[in-house]
Length: 297
Ligand SMILES: Cc1cc2nc3c(=O)[nH]c(=O)nc-3n(C[C@H](O)[C@H](O)[C@H](O)COP(=O)(O)O)c2cc1C
Image (cartoon, rainbow, N blue to C red):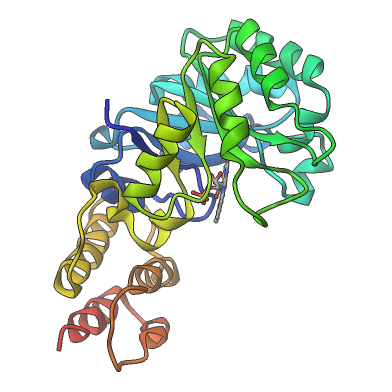
């Protein structure tokens, strides 16, 4: 099994981006989170179009966020045919979700979370996994307890982002708690947080004993992190042009700003005297391609 997978990232994990990560060696691809309150109002065809998962991406995990069992029950039949696994987001810290007891808010009451998850597990044959943080805050580091409850309630895999909800993205990801969770669990545990290179990922696996590593933010800038290759400037330009090709071939929308935002991120490691931010002045995808090709001079 390849040990690196792509983290769910809202606003980032487009079809083209997911495919590029896959081409670079990502093992399992996670979609961004989808709100069950939104999906449950759609038809199967509408959901299929929205998620736009291509056969080359599999195995794929669809991530759902919510706290209302009825909405999960309505949504799961719409998505279960599209992926190998369904993941529940118990780590999101966005205010609008916390206010509705979704995402990381569910960590505050592990028994209630277990009750919800048990019923979600019962409504599908697809494996259910859960992505958590290590606790709500520094006074409630309850990841071990939460994971034991999740396992007892039929969850097949757990991903841990090594920060509390209150930490948001500050401080360092806590690898010690991941190790404790792994030691106390008999299901696969995926470690997540602060992997900035392939070597970091291998270190994380070794230090925690976890089964796989999940990479988020670094993949936004360097989707080739999954390949363990050192890229030259020329290689990076080829990757960017490949991303654009995938976007034009597979995406079912055409947003110039979506393309230049992703392209700009991927220019991070290119040294040039050209102002890379100017890519955001491009008015079409053709102009973006021309701009990127110009970075080679
Ligand atoms: C732009 C962005 C969007 C994210 N969206 C999601 C999401 O939809 N679902 C989720 O579980 N986590 C989401 N996350 C959190 C990541 O999946 C990951 O847990 C976090 O970034 C830590 O990993 P990293 O240090 O490798 O980035 C998001 C993170 C970022 C930066």
